[in-house]
Image (cartoon, rainbow, N blue to C red):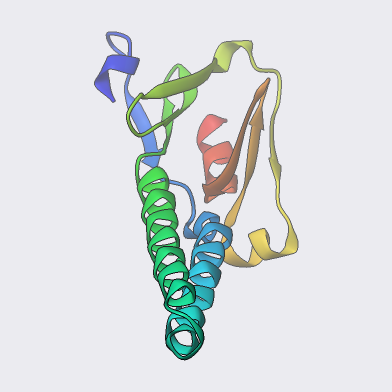
Length: 143
């Protein structure tokens, strides 16, 4: 994280996206795993190839779940004294940043679910960061 900071810049907040960001990818992975499980259980009585396809589907679901959690874990939202940035990527790290002195307004977009669970999309200039935990608190820190 330090390589994205300039000398004298201090970190005010560093957080990972809200856990709700994992709901869709994990639901897809669970669907693959459940379908694969059904194929494995009932496939042996029909044909061995169906059971093999089911095992492959279970593996695909497990890999999809691992990838989703790993991507979520490797994503950080960082607010410093000078900029707001999001750092993401597994093998190759990327950073998108916006300088706070160049941003006129910082907005928070929240759905009803976002308000209930405490997350939102943070929009600062041309940078849009979804699933920010405590997005309203981030805006308060910016003021």
